[in-house]
Image (tube, rainbow over all chains, first blue to last red; front, side, top):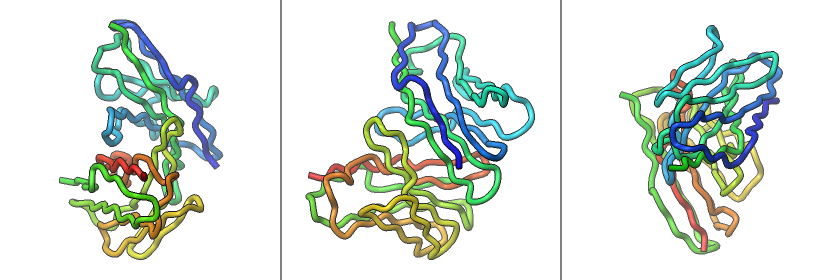
Length: 114
Length: 110
């Protein structure tokens, strides 16, 4: 079984400040990890993913995440927030075999303060 | 190119009415297909997935059903909608880049 915990359903940061969205996972097998972004009334867009190899993953829009196996974490960061980053962000985990189902966290709504 | 289409974008239906939401994928064959529901404050819940024509797996007991009549078509249905069926429904397929999602259907049951 696998699960994802996103700490903080709402996060507010000032424009230009560091963005940190937390994600911890539980998986009995080596996981694949994902971050998705959702703008209002739209589908989900892939930000970045970790499968194997380098543990620091860079994605679109200046976001990056680091896979830390010892901490079972995959936190999402961006050095400087933009107003356009305001959205909901979902962390997800998938097993690397089998039916490849994605299990999502409950999401974090990011608000950018001008 | 590979694309996923989902319709309608919004739907308002009375309690007890039927439902049919359609999802189609282009540019790939034999995809794994998924239906998720997103309820306010509850994240995304996997409802059904399909690994091939006629093969449907249900993740949670509910008032909905799914069918896959063709390789690239995935349909979500209900015979009688409940108020609790309201939500944002997302179709997805498992592409090489990860899951690719449709643009979603906002269903409001009144």
